[in-house]
Each structure stands twice: as structure tokens, then as C-alpha cells.
Amino acid sequence: MRHPIQQALQEVREMRQRILEKQRFKGYSGRARALSGCIALLMALAMRWGLIPPTSEAYLLGWAVVVMLAFGLNFGALIYWFLYDPEVERDWRRLKPALEVLPALFAGGVLTLTLVQHHQYDLLFGLWMTLYGLANFTSRHVLPRNIAWVGWYYLLAGAICLLTPGISFTQPLVMGLVFFVGEWFGGLVLHYDEHPQNTVWAFLGLPNPFTPHDTEI
Image (cartoon, one colour):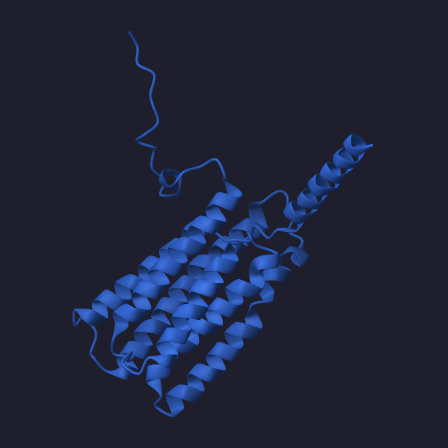
């Protein structure tokens, strides 16, 4: 009796896994996300090296440029997926998971404007990290489950920024490094979910140097 029951349970698990795979959202690009993290780090370095005037207003404009570039990269990858992936069939309902993060982004924009109006620039890093962490965490039902760790990472970083008085808006490397690490982590999670057989070298578009090659004799 145990064998048929175990076989039935295994079939149920496999069916559940197939359903989850079917429901998983594939519209986000891991590489676009990692590139967004690189942009954030480059902007932080530009601020740190004095290429941008060391004022809160100039820094805020710099981070706004990062947001626009990152949004363009990821939104562009999303549109490409929607238009050219044969499994999507240009069904607008497949974009629902991407639309569900818009309320968090809207709230982030409103809270950012509120803090800027009150000249509370030092709270912005923590606010952005916390809201972005929530967006990642709430997406764990339609994205790979490891994306929840990315959410916790941003939530923890945001809490540290909000609770540490010494962290200032004029310390751009805090923001740049946190988002560089987080976006690379998130990008790798998405990439390995789509291509589990690939290595980090494939993620970078490079051949694996550790793969043995056949030599002719």
C-alpha cells in the first residue's frame, strides 16, 4: 500500500511544480537588472569623485537619472519579452505581475517628494531601500522563491540606513554599493531560474574558461 501512495504523492508534487512553473512571471531580465546595479554604482562613484556638485539637489537629480535609466532598461526588456516571446502571445494579462509593483513605486515617489519638501534628504536612502525590498518580497509568489532573500537584503539595508544617524545623503557610496550588490544578486536569481544549466560566465556573455575543450591529435 505504501508504494502506490508514495507514487501518487510524487505525481501531485510534480503537478504542483508544473503549475507553479506555468504561473511564474518571465518578463524580467536578469541582465538588465544587473546592469541597473552597475549604473547605480557608477553614479555613486561620479558623486564621490566630485564629478557632480556636492549638493543634495544635484545628488537627487543624479539618482533620478539612475532611476530613469534603470526603468528604461528593465521596461525595454519587459516589452521585448511581451512582443517576441511565443509563449506570451501578446496577452496583456501576462503583464499583471509587473503592474502589481506600481503602487509601491507610486508610494515611493510621493514619500520622496514629501521628504524633499521638508529637506529630509538623509532619510531617502533608507526609504528607497525599504520600499524596493517590499516590492521584491511581495513578488516572490510569481518570481523565483530566492527573490525573497533579495527583498530581505534591501529591507535590512533600509533599516540600517534609517536607524543609523551617521549615514547621510551626501555619502553616495552607501546607496551605490547596496544597489549594486542587490541588483546583481537579483539578476543572477532571475537568470538562473530561466537558464538553470548556465554559469555566471554565461550570464556575462562569456565562454566558461573551466570547460574542457576537445583537442585534435
